[in-house]
Amino acid sequence: MSTPLLFAFPGNETLAACLAAGLDAELGEFEVRRFPDGESYVRFDSDVTGRPVILLATLVRPDEKVMALLFAAMAARDEGAHSVGLVAPYLSYMRQDRQFRPGEAITSCHFAKILSGAVDWLVTVDPHLHRHSSLSDIYTIPTTAASSAPLLAAWIGDNVKNPFLLGPDEESRQWVAEVARGSGDAPFSVFSKVRHGDRDVVITLPDSIDLSGRTPVLVDDIISTAGTMAEAARLITRQGGRAPVCVAVHGVFAGKAEELLMDAGVARVVTTNTIAHATNAIDITGLLARSTRSMLAP
Ligand code: R5P
Image 1 (cartoon, rainbow, N blue to C red):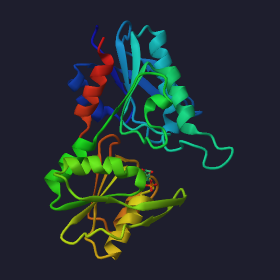
Image 2: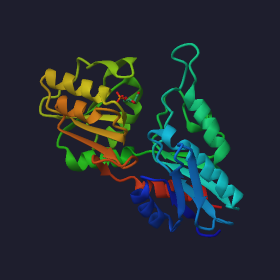
Image 3: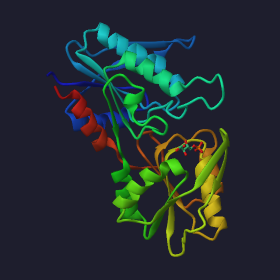
């Protein structure tokens, strides 16, 4: 098969250079911009004829990006690409996985339908799988959901003495357990969380945990508004625990999330580079390269 061509959407350039090196892929050139009226413009400079095309676009704030992504996938096919795959280190629209109120769009399903119609395969990292047990429940194309748990565990093992891992809600138990196992069997527990609104969560700390002599490490898949992490951090310190370290896979940081975390007195916030941010300390490039290579295998 000919050498894959990797195209980085704006904002993904740093990750693209590392990923291309890890895949022995060539970095392709294309133009993605907006017309003055806000419509998207895409033009391939590199010749994609007969080549496997990889589009790299992390899908944080997806509504600003998706039209250009769909047009790029269609244009690559029109230009004769052998195949078109999507590497989306952060996959958006996974959290609306049922109707919470009558009449709501179940956007995880609708978004999956849109992407499944546009690309041949999808690679992502820790998509928010809660009520959907796997991506194949909603995506009709081959997908790989790479797990960053071993990388998170390694970072905690190397950087935090006597960690006590805490997951924000019951659904995170299995995942936090995996990170704990990888961090030398660190003790762990999970909170109970009730969400009352986009920015309003109520969290309860389990009675039985003893944080004395331990550094609390809050582990979650997404920091969005940071309401969850900030509330959990406040609860821990109010009960006499040390200022926690917050570790998340995807740092979305919506609105005043960073301010909220600082005000809550967290010791440090650490994320992976699925979304470029100053808190990135855990590199998922190798993970992405392995998963993408398996998609490209003949
Ligand atoms: C939801 O269940 C996720 O695992 C996260 O806990 C949630 O997305 C965090 O959102 P926020 O930062 O807005 O509280």
